[in-house]
Amino acid sequence: MMLDDKPRSASVMSLQPSKLAEISGADFKAVLLKHPETALHLIRNLIRVTRGLNERARESGRKREKLREYIDELGTKNGADLPSVKRWSTAKRWILAILVICAVLQYYFFDVFIQMLSLGGVNTFTGN
Image 1 (spheres, one colour):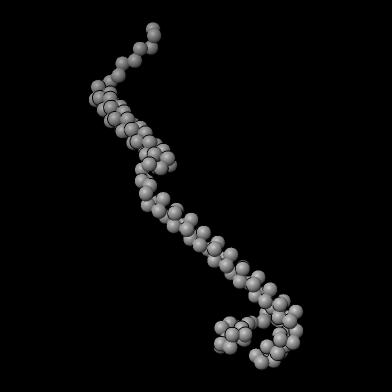
Image 2 (cartoon, one colour):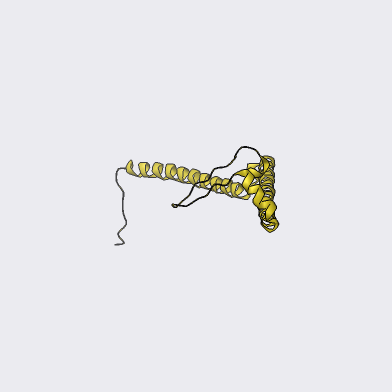
């Protein structure tokens, strides 16, 4: 963070007790100039981090695009055209038809039962 001479933009938190050292910006730059291999190692690590961030940003863009396509697809679909909705509608029609038939049969048989009670007496044939 200190290589661009701007204020710190990140914080660090330790999960365990740690021993740390503080190096001034001038001393750090002096070490990098005196030890080019360390500077190259630092540059490679910065490139690795940047590539990882680029890949994450690219993947995030892909996911965002897929989500946008899915939302657009849902906007163009009619719910009544979905197979599950068609099955549900068909089942609902069958159940309603069966209920209507049961209601008609119940009404008819109830009427017959009332008529049987109003006959007064029922003669049964015993077979003798």
